[in-house]
Length: 293
Ligand SMILES: Nc1ncnc2c1ncn2[C@@H]1O[C@H](COP(=O)(O)OP(=O)(O)O)[C@@H](O)[C@H]1O
Ligand SMILES: [Mg+2]
Image 1: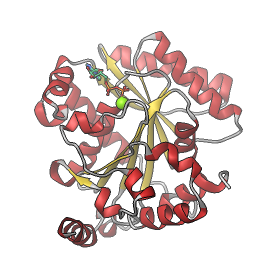
Image 2: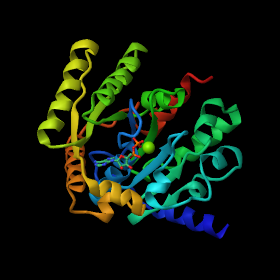
Image 3: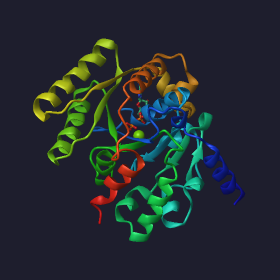
């Protein structure tokens, strides 16, 4: 109870930095996904979130990977409650948020992620009400999803304001990243995809990989997939994973950390899109559930 009261106060006293930045003012919802597994989505999500936070933004990361949830392991935390407790056990959004590095907010999806697609009317109302409390409190909500296209992941892709698709330079990873975009396009949906090439050996490999995907998407899917950048392959990532610390915290001067900083700068410099009625948490919830009923 005391815990809850404390986190409620914390949440309410937090002012999203967007309030002082009249150009934004809306929580942006981002999905991170990939075609193939193990390409570095969770490491990217966590460290990218920390980089946005270091640039003055309030960020919440949400582990929406049902099968291989591991954001908690990457940070060495084990939150007591997850989305399941919110949906099924009347826990508030404040109760299931775990505060990590420098105020980074974290929600574990747990088995709640599959439940999301099978909510009763009443549970749905509760979920919407609780999620809407984050509106304007955080600048970014980033969903780390599973690989491949499960129904749940697809729903997050279709509902977010934008989707960052992570690939490595290896052909199977490229093919599967392309397959995700093709599938989404085939369903008749327009999604703002952005590309991150992870584990690139050098600038050249990062650029070439991004170009390959961009050109294929442009030519065969009539889709523009701007690249956000690349993250260099760096043994410090694996070392940090073993230490259960984000690599940008454990090795802030490593080449992988510098890559993440560049991506965050590029991401924020391209974020001048005007707030629209369909964006943000309300738009996300609308798209997430409009096909459920
Ligand atoms: N930039 C990188 N350089 C070196 N190794 C990396 C990098 N990114 C990820 N890895 C390795 O890949 C593993 C899987 O990363 P993870 O983020 O868990 O992938 P996913 O979430 O896509 O399954 C990590 O434990 C790490 O060993
Ligand atoms: Mg993962």
